[in-house]
Image (tube, rainbow, N blue to C red):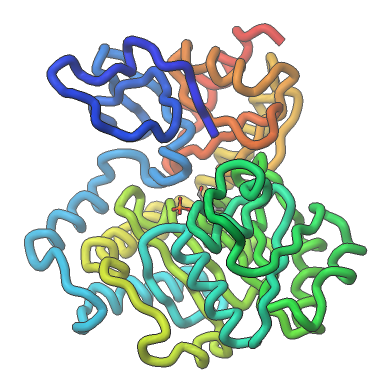
Length: 393
Ligand SMILES: Cc1ncc(COP(=O)(O)O)c(C=O)c1O
């Protein structure tokens, strides 16, 4: 989603042969270390990170509480699966449920956003006995078989499986008539990102989400919020569900949840959880103690450092001060910020990187996407504003 032409600065270190599969085109940014909101490169640059490794580094880099929690857990017991009880796992689930406060009180920890979505769909099929899923145009849900099938545009591009595992209908964003027409008695699940990430930091809004909730209630479909990117504080609320006052039947979340330790969660209502029988769900790595220690530390930092308030304040400051130079407007919520650009966002991104500021693009060619760490301060936003002012419109 954010390809940059390779340059000599991004070439592998001369002492290492590169055996890695070509996945994303890479930024010309050979990161050697990082601290706070700053990346330090092998060639001596200090770069302000407003992208956080695709929304992952919520606490920035080298956060002391998170680092300590992982080191202590690594020393005490680095791994046991769900087959044995562990206090750290119970604590992580309790912390997450309390943090959300949505009544989605049963948690299944897995490893990635796509895996959480696959399991959410599986639960919806089990509960309803139906086989059709409704998703949204411009939505992104991951790259595995089921998650890719509900991702807008994947079928015609990278999907790579011979057929989708179930029928999917994509709704145009904001189209109320399509809600009534397409969500019917044969719909197992409706899955949406309340604030679309890859789609361009696009905020679906409370009214639209409420209409989805009402239609799911009327038809018996399960409503799933994919908060892999917008959850765990990124909007300035625990989840976008809290911000909008709309509670789905399931939330999937990942990215910020571990601050870089790979993990994800499926949070379920009581009714969904009642369909979880022994051996219906499973995982080797999910809910491992290191992941759980990371989750506990992330939520602890968000709460004890009042980061939700800070996300709301600093993201409002971005919106108030950074509509300058090639930026003509904003969209999104909290630190899932879309800056609308007069020039192609990719060009603005390139110019910002030349000024030592890392940002992201999106599926909308005129939206620059900021996924800043929650620890961002106004002084860092001032650097972004100055850089934007120096870029031609
Ligand atoms: C909203 C959303 N859902 C799901 C995913 C997939 O997550 P993962 O790459 O961890 O499988 C992403 C990744 O960008 C995402 O933004």
